[in-house]
Amino acid sequence: MSNATLTITGMSCGHCVAAVSNALKAVDGVTVEDVRIGSATVAFDAAKVTPAQLAQVVTDEGYAATVAG
Image (cartoon, rainbow, N blue to C red):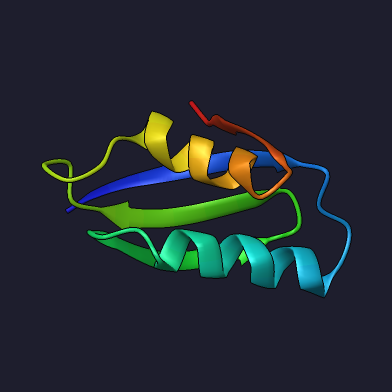
């Protein structure tokens, strides 16, 4: 498993955290380690998904996301 941290803007409450967490958990090969207002840290199977795809999942939920680092 690889790790990625996403920087997320537009989150402001617990509902936002839950929405992002649930969206990431739904991706095959992803284990959500931590989601907070402004960021998410995940472990992922690089054979199944890329960090850029994970950022797109968050963007599809209505938040701006980029891969940190």
